[in-house]
Image 1 (tube, rainbow, N blue to C red):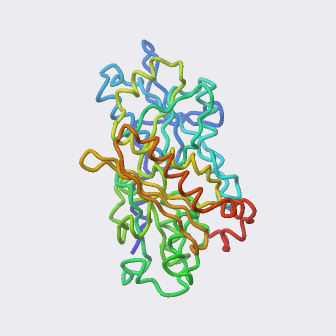
Image 2: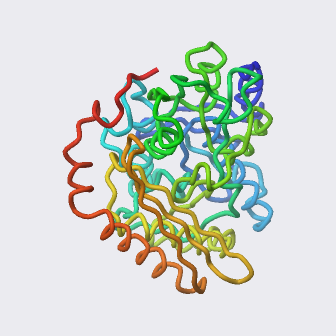
Image 3: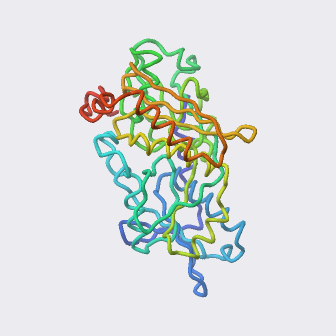
Length: 360
């Protein structure tokens, strides 16, 4: 199966956009600026997936606010983050938290952009003073996708012993090794297109990606299978887009408040409360998902050892208005069950002990 051609087709930018240098290492994709109005500046990373999310935000803003439909009234400012630039090390070795948001935070606080569009799973549980994140767009499917380089391998169970699987996620690594401890999980960095190209080249036998990202780029046909939660519990806030602005920016708040999807926001707030209660570091495999079923919030959470030898799981239900409380109590429960020794081991383990593999 060949994935690269699809990836290249998506990466082509709209012909109406032009590149121009900006501050804080940004590049601005702009249309001709309407001198009569102040443009709304959207900060985003430059990967094809990040741009797809920025364009989706722009589309929804223009649907809701006629004044933003005028040419030049929305400006997309593209910037590179530390996580984008350093690809030969694992996220854990780089420090984990905020690797894909710090530069966007700086641009926001420096009034270089008005709003920032994030993949919520990349956003730390704390936000810089002077900023808020009051908006989540409607959530895409949260599951992980299994992608095989061999058309005869249809699911994880079909992989042979000692199969090489590319993933930068300790959460995925842990759950894979719990299913088959002979698997070799290698650190797999780069955007979606880069990872699929490596799979195409035979660098690994298979990889896992969020189906949400593939859908947003119309690349979900690349998925061999979509994994249910029992096989691979997704990351906290996976599949959700968040929009951040300055806390005192009434204009931006007006715009993004209108885009918020309350059900998504409720579920994401629950999951992030779970993560915050665990205070998980970048060495700790953590998964957590909430959904609302027949008016009831259902949450599932997990923490595990990176090698899959130990897993602690919980499931909670309750009223959606108690979402943060449900998530926090679930995190506190698993933290107590795993014990201080578990988390101390996570802190003391070296990157080599946690990953056990090399970057591909």
